[in-house]
Image 1 (spheres, rainbow, N blue to C red):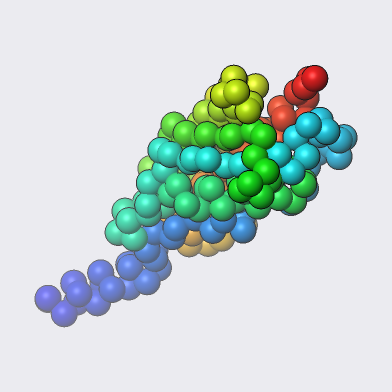
Image 2 (image 1 turned 90 degrees about the vertical axis):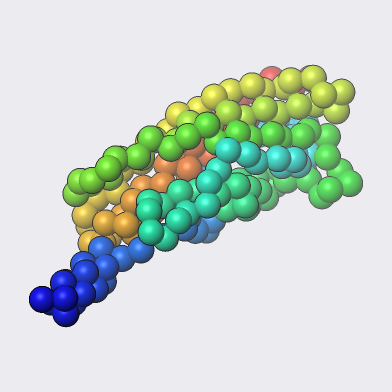
Amino acid sequence: MRILTAVGLLFLTFVTGCAQPADPKRMTVTILPSEAPFPAALSSAICVRSVTGGEPTNPLWVAKVDNAEFKTALADSLRERGLLARPEGCRFQLDVNLLGLSQPVFGLAFTVTTHVNYKLLGSASEPVLLETISAPYTAEMSEHLVAVIRLARANEGSIRNNITEFLTRLRALRLG
């Protein structure tokens, strides 16, 4: 009986898998809905100073997004658009707080909504942009059959959509 139980648990682990950490490449924004220009003042001017609020993934629990993964995806998304500054050329400091991930407990399609607070500060530490953005993403069964990987994909898609919305708001800034 114990052998049968152990085999059953092993099979269940194989079928369901372990929780997957987020992949920064899957969270990086590669395409924007609009290619309108960003304000010239932002060109090579933004440094990502801090990313807080993330949580590391516990392989035995559920997928999360940690600070380093989010920071990498955000910096790469800014770099893609020519907005990321070299450390010595920062005219704007960006502080980001991942307020939370609204995740489902179970299901076939997983919809995750990320809630992120962005604070862009100018050279005199004056706020240039203060925004809290909530962005959903749904990972369908067609994206991946294994539930824990599908949840990780939903997390990654939601972060990517959140960064996309942040970039859209940066584009709309009126800087003098």
